[in-house]
Amino acid sequence: MSTPHNSAAAGDFAKTVLMPGDPLRAQFIAENFLKDARLVNNVRGIHGYTGTYDGVPVSVMASGMGMPSMGIYSYELYSMYGVENILRIGSAGSLSADVKLRDVILGMGACTNSNFAAQYKLSGVFAPIASYDLLRLAVDAADGVGARWHVGNLISSDTFYSDDDGENAGWMKMGVLGIEMEAAALYMTAARLKKRALAICTVSDNLVTGEALPALDRQTTFTQMMEIALRVAVKCNG
Ligand code: HPA
Picture 1 (cartoon, rainbow, N blue to C red):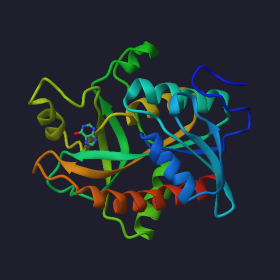
Picture 2 (cartoon, rainbow, N blue to C red):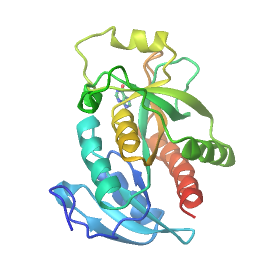
Picture 3 (cartoon, rainbow, N blue to C red):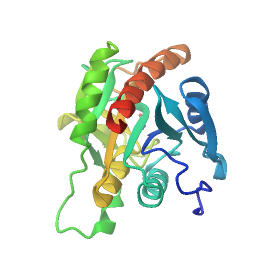
Picture 4 (cartoon, helix red, strand yellow):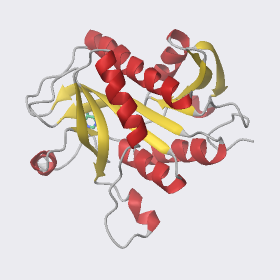
């Protein structure tokens, strides 16, 4: 089997897939964290690998950037490759003075300014949420690695370069913790297909204070987020 976006065969993916946005991150994770990782997809350079961590099969594949890209890859993994759990691992901009650089946001919910939910033809506004099972495991894992973590809402935005300077003020007013670009599509796709999803984001910049993480620090915080995701992957798969 294959799709226009994924050349993997049936059975090539583990039940749990970690999804960074960046294909090179996926490759880095496969090479540095997984054992016996093999490349199972490389269509459009979207590296997908399957290996093991602590003896448990785990896959990693990039989502690309934005809701449409995440929507495609997560839909195919869930509905065509038998994947049960997707853990997005990425960066987010903090929308709160209390959520500092390097902190981890576990996205309990994901608001969005995208029209992605229109396809479901609902009679109101859907509230995309994470899997509680995965969230609970992630809180334990975040404590285990000594991360400073927050559980709350994300806003998945369609625009990185918004024409509206005041766009974030409304989300801040509603207590949303961080802005990123994929979680809501992942949560809606998981809900529609009766699967599990969670977004784990490290704070790379703070939109309240204007601070941004130096390049070197991004690697360290990334490693901590990876350890959280891999601990969840082992527990939810085992
Ligand atoms: N916007 C969208 N996604 C992001 C941002 C941002 O400011 N920072 C990190 N990911």
